[in-house]
Length: 351
Image 1 (cartoon, rainbow, N blue to C red):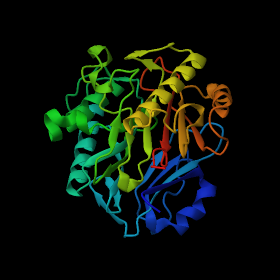
Image 2: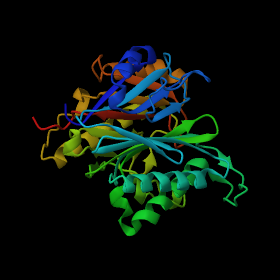
Image 3: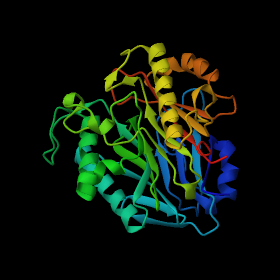
């Protein structure tokens, strides 16, 4: 097996797989587990991220990433970061308290993960997952002197961007990978990430302004991510789709309206998938339209009451065998009802 493998589903359904393949595991993310429930099985010191967001329409889920390489998986810790490295790809997970403010937490977290990636010889980010408590909330000034009256998502963007510019300077934009940032609960910024020895190919959406070029309307520092990232050949060449929502250009489409926002989001997903295929010289990409082959689709819903309508609409789009995880989460803009991301590990593998 080449590259990466992904397993996902209800915790009980994945427990045996985790036990059998623990030595190959690179990252485990558990969603919606009751507070106080035991984390990784004893003796398995793999990167493990707890995401407290409720699973809508079911119980706790587990997302497991495994290495397909024959060599040993090395694991360790660097400060707050638990990491695993198979020689080609580095996965990591951390939780950073927000005591000194969101901007500072994002800055230090990204400063440390970028430093770790550089030290391990895996300097090319492929994916970032961010869970930020109270993402749409405005904070008062912190004890560290951080600015008050700034939405937490905008403060997060400032800290993350500072870390990228600090390390890469004028070349920072070339390092922005697929990413998502949604709301959560608790008092910690939770992050999981993947970085590789070789660079992936970052993909933009021709229907949208690149996030890092957003005007100041969305904050003094723009978000720093690509719309998708294609994995390098050594990892199988699949596609990691960023959190995607109802945005055209840089503006929210259909503010607060569920059905048209869902439709616009799906149009954007198709545009990204087609752009990824076109970059490979495939004008009619294997991912386009309702035939998209995903190993995991993650749907974030601001209102859990939207679940039935969204699930019904998506059932006609993806095969029944496609794992779709629905999570309750605030979205980065207050007028957005939902966001969708995905993993397609075999999406662009040469035929």
